[in-house]
Length: 112
Length: 115
Image (cartoon, rainbow over all chains, first blue to last red):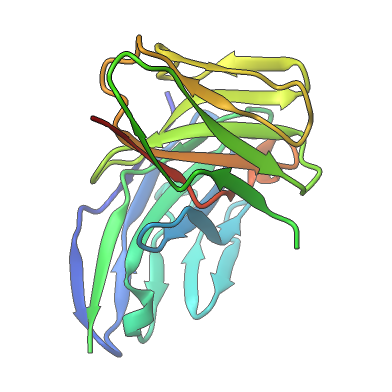
């Protein structure tokens, strides 16, 4: 079945450091890919998405590129801030399907 | 403002009691979902509904029940049959259930603790 694997956390960075959170997926068709962010005690919010191969999703300085050849959707940000501290979830949704499959989440801590 | 509301934010229950978690959306979305989140884990799907008066079991439906009598409401009942109900419960909705239209909008969550 479909699945999403993302790097284990926690990831601890200093402010202004470069961030990469790896995400790979397995899917039978051509899924849409998403990154969601969860701040402490809150629900998830969509951070960015990509719906086909080579699409780049971007928002708030975060970027991720849909790489079909490597089945990956890695999240990157050039300079993190303390306010980026949160849990990040990679997810996929198959066309025609109801389910969104979520990864286990990666907790990010950013130190001032 | 459009969005999803969940109430209450914190809920305490004694063992053997049923409890109902509320979820309301004013986004005019057709699809609604309930997830369970345990510490350090991802989201697990409990139930989902694609249209009014219809719902389907997710991966961990045992011990839970839902109803979808109105488009904007999708309450979840945690029954006494649920063996380990202490968790964070998230409600979500989406325009539809296909591909990019499955972008999900989440409520703030309800933290349920069984005493």
